[in-house]
Image 1 (spheres, protein in one colour):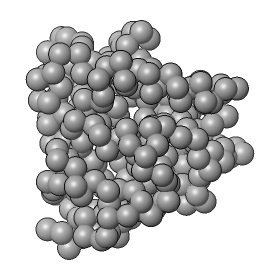
Image 2 (tube, rainbow, N blue to C red):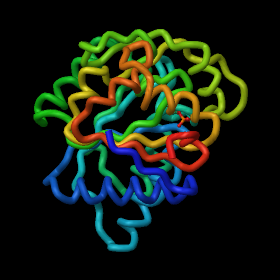
Image 3 (cartoon, protein in one colour):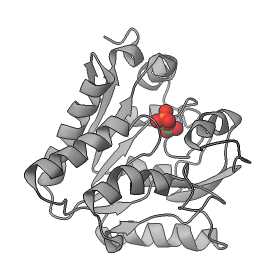
Image 4 (cartoon, rainbow, N blue to C red):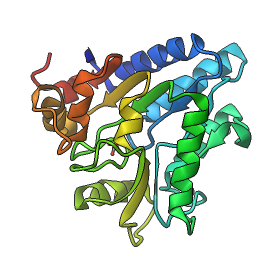
Length: 241
Ligand code: PGA
């Protein structure tokens, strides 16, 4: 795993976005997977700025990383809403280029099957960008997740629900489950970029990089990935610098 540390959240997001754009440009119609949340805000903005500046649209196909079970795409706080607002809308990405978990589906197994089929048809994920959860989760793969799963529906930990509250506007009954691409899928991505910022991520980043590789801290499993770069701002990097 390579590690890049920049002074500011914006700078590390720009570096990650530039690297992402470079890799994406080297692949025809790459299948890409990006995270929602607080971490990728600047990252997405840099992608949008890039395409606005060159007056073009990306040729990428998108697959959703995860979604809250029981939350519709129209609700601010859903993962899909994030992308509509920060990426798909501004970039004008047509629906046929997007595959996303429907958190309202009555048959979640079918949602899993569809996502697995999209990835298999494409020959795997080309580029995956991930944030790191407060508990070291990747997507919604919480500690203890089975590393052999291609997708899963999972009960979310209290710490994940707590951080998730900030995504929703106003108080609501938090969903208790998530649907997510599984660790087997994410770990087999051809290129992985991981982004983390802020002092609240220092401890988990430290464990991810220097701790034992264990599915009890899913992000630590990235230590062995052949093409993974971790982008940190100064605050998240702790003693790593
Ligand atoms: P955050 O979430 O970007 O809002 O910190 C990261 C995650 O849970 O993966």
